[in-house]
Image (cartoon, rainbow, N blue to C red):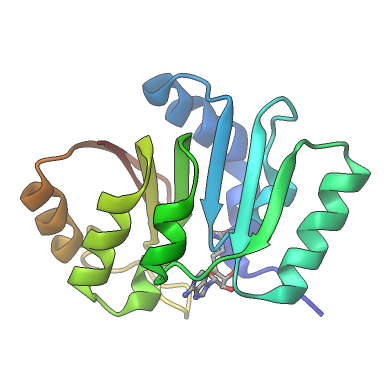
Length: 173
Ligand SMILES: C[S@@+](CC[C@H](N)C(=O)[O-])C[C@H]1O[C@@H](n2cnc3c(N)ncnc32)[C@H](O)[C@@H]1O
């Protein structure tokens, strides 16, 4: 059984606007990679973009695979642990990488986060963080200072898009 978490249900409300804003910056990609995809691929509003969906939850992967088949979406679905640098290095180049609401799970492990962003073969990485607590309250400091510091260290430029429950960093490598 795979449950949708509250924020993905909330994200459905602004999904179109979100991707329009992202792709205004990155240009519409041909190929994307979604790390820790969860059920996000089920709500992606484009069918003409090659979608590589990865996660460590096998039930999620099964569900996404079924959705791609049913909806005729071109792509790949496979197990990938975001902490596995060797596997990350083997990935082919893509246009945009999504890492939505995954990096907080690494508990501010700066070296791992830096390694992931640095090793990805892509021009753009879009990273998101929730800006509501698990109890649905707004966070006092929604921006992640530790993450800003990593991007500054790498000298990567970024833009920020904010929605009521989530903050998105559009990072240019
Ligand atoms: C909060 S959910 C976010 C799902 C999706 N990215 C979204 O924003 O809708 C976190 C996801 O990260 C996955 N995950 C957790 N640890 C991971 C890891 N080490 N490598 C890859 N995915 C991981 C979980 O299985 C889950 O699907």
